[in-house]
Each structure stands twice: as structure tokens, then as C-alpha cells.
Image 1 (cartoon, rainbow, N blue to C red):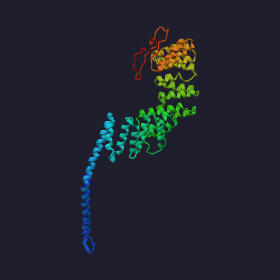
Image 2 (image 1 turned 120 degrees about the horizontal axis):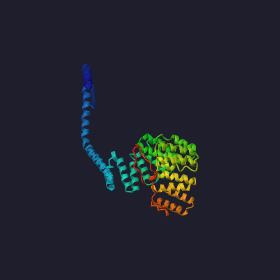
Image 3 (image 1 turned 135 degrees about the vertical axis):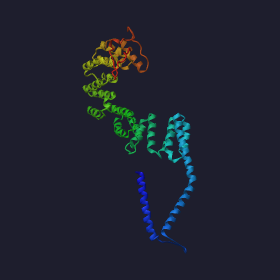
Image 4 (image 1 turned 135 degrees about the horizontal axis):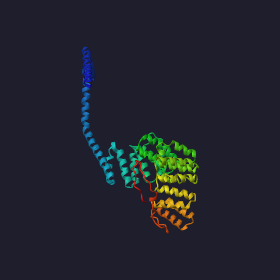
Length: 419
């Protein structure tokens, strides 16, 4: 097809040339140039040919004159690119001072000035020279303003200054070229400052940019919605947030736990229970087992029955045992609560379990063991091993009696855990 098109074009050119020559041969035209008594006479065809030839000669001469300068510029550009590449490699290796020197040389070329100053700012930031990094960002902003803004926000966030990030980015968030990295930093700063509404307002633009992987995007959205639900001022606001959240997020344990706790605080315990129970039927989660015992004093007997039924699914779950102990404590079933909680702390040293165990001992009138449990809770909080309860027949609790077959998500039986 290309060959036929070329032949057709050549034929058209030949026909046009023949017609043009015939037209010129009939009347070649006449050109007269007179300057200070000197006259130059020629045909129009020759004048046009002379002009084209003169333009070609002048262009060739200009190119020859510029060739040394262009060759020198090419050499300098090549060296600048090499300095930029070597500087980035040195920065990746941790040789930040050497990287800064190489990048400073590279920044002298206008084509890579902006990226070079950005890399120099990162090297200075890695060395802890924040003032120098800020100077480099000021220089980079002259060429790549959006990138410099995003990097400045990231540096402030790394230094634990979310308030400065908010002051920097909030006035710019409506800009059309607001960079995605800056949007992420703004969300992180809003989360650090417990500004759930700002984080929610910033989320939609981030999803359109596709700057995060789907997993990281979901994790960030989960944090935003969790904070928003925790700070919801009313049940209607909470329900609105829950309905507005993407479907995949509503299956996340953190989301379900946050909704359940906040709904329970508004007196909607049945709704909270329903969400946790539905999630546990789909897939067992330890954090939801713990949250089930943190829904307040309502529906204690019902929650107790449901939690005891879960023992057939997760008999050695420390969080489930802790929840059962808490529910027993809230119903003043001290002896039964002690049994569950002793098993829980033997399987896993948990601050919540030790505190609840202390409450059960205190309720039963055993102040000595209650004080020891509270002390153990403080030790666990500080990362220290707890002390054995005095007067107990054994420091280990046999958990074999409650072991049933456990299977993973693929249906493969797990080996029993012994403590």
C-alpha cells in the first residue's frame, strides 16, 4: 500500500512539474532591480532560484558557525545528565554529601535544574539539614513548583509537623494542578490533627489520580472513615458515613469495629451486634471478637450466649476469652469470668484481660489477687513480663480441654495450639 501511494505521489509531482514548466516557458516573467544607477535584469524563475540558493547558503553558514556552540552544549548536557544519574545513585547508597555535590553540578543546566534541586533537597533532608533542604526547594519551585510543594509537605510530615502541612496545603488544595503526593500528605496531616471532615473532603481527588495502589488506597480510606465514624456527632451522621463508605471498606474489621463502638455509644447496640455477628459469620477476626465485649451494658445475656457459641469456632482465641470474661464481669458472674480470663492471660498476656481479671477478683472479694492482676496490667503496658498469681496451683492453664478442630480459609485443618 505504501509503494502504490509513493508511485501516485511521484506521478502527481511529475504532472505538476510538466504543467508548471509549460506555464513558465510561455512567459518566464521579468524582474528589474535598480540600486544607485545599477540595474539587474533577470527572469522571475531565475530570481526565485537565486533567492532559494542564497537562503540555503546562509542557512548552511549559520549552522557551521553554531556547530561549535551546539557541540559544547551537547557535551555539557551529557555531563549534567551523568552528574544527575550519579548523584541519584549516591543518594540511594546513602552518600548524601557526595550526592549533593554531583547534583549541584547538574543543576547548572536549565533542562534538569528542577529535578536536580529536588534531589538535592532530599539529600539535605536525609542529612537532617532542614534549612538547606528548604533553600533547595525554593530553587526547585522556580522550575517544578508542584513537585517542590509536594516534597516540602512530605518533609514537614516526616518531621512530625502536621499543623505546618495543613497551613501549607489547605490554601492550595483547590488548585487544578494540586499534586497527588501533596493530597496524600494533606490527608495524613488531617488524620494526625483529628480533622476527619478535611480528610473526607480530600479523598475524592486522590482516587481519581490513581497515585496509590489499590491496597494502600483502601488502607488510607479505611483510616479516614474510621476517624470520621469515631468523631460522628449523631447516629444519623454515623449512618450516613457508613452508607457512603465503599462496599469493600464496609467489610474491613477496623471499619466494622469503629461503627459498632460508635453505634453502641448512641444506644444502637443491636445494630452494632448485627454488624459484628455478620462479619464473624463471613470470616473470623480477633479484633471484632474483642470489640464485641466493648458495646456497653446493653444486651449482656444475648451477647454472652453468642460469644459462648463462638467458642466452637475459636476455642483458644484470647480476645474471645477476654470478651467472655468482660461480659461475665458486667453480669457479676465473678467465678465464671475468672475462668475465662485466666485462660486468656495464659494464652496471651493482654492488658485488657489482666484488668478485667482484676475486676473479677475484686468483685469476688479477693483483693490480693486483684491487686496482683492490676499490677500485671501495668507491667504488660510497659512491655515487661507479668508476675505469677500467688496461691495458684499452676502457672500454666491447660487449654486442651477446649480444643476442637480448627481450619484455615482453605479448609485445611490447623495443628492445635497449646498455649
